[in-house]
Image (cartoon, rainbow, N blue to C red):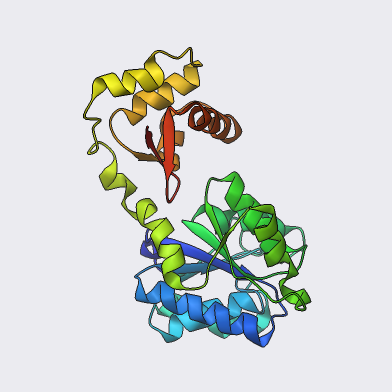
Length: 272
């Protein structure tokens, strides 16, 4: 429901607990505002708490937001957000769902839909989360999909944000304190289509030294051959490489460790 154009815009997912603290709500609104100022749309799940704050602030600042449901597109849940859903549609945003119309909001649907929230965006911002729950699932999905994960830090006595600190401790997310902390990382994602094919290696002998003389697997060879045309985002690589996401990530890591390629901000890869 709404505008299909809203699905084509560069976007960031903003997720968090359904029972946020005042600090969490403030940060959700703050970073949603940063997104609007930067021309980036906000994607979330229309749930109570952080999701609601992210959608509502985006609308207040005349931005574009997309809500991904865990129910049929005609079954808005929670019911308290029906008015918010209408505002999203009328403002040029969208409400989307993979479930058939009439599907009730069953508990098992929400963890599944979180992969869509993370997958359709450039990265996921975890605002406030416990150690378990939908936000942690969304962050995990983002990592599996090759997306960036950003995290707002919390004080040690704030149990509502213990999951955020855990993500940072494990090295699974990047600490952010202001909008620029995210946009600097995501810039390459926004521009990778125009980058591809433009950055041609200047010295063929350097390229040969880095990978052509290595005994690489077929998948690794295809990756390097593609990168000869210029830097490329992981999504573009996945379109051209007949391999699972796990195999592709493994090959990219191996090539990085061998010094054949390097990763730039925004999951963009290029030959070393």
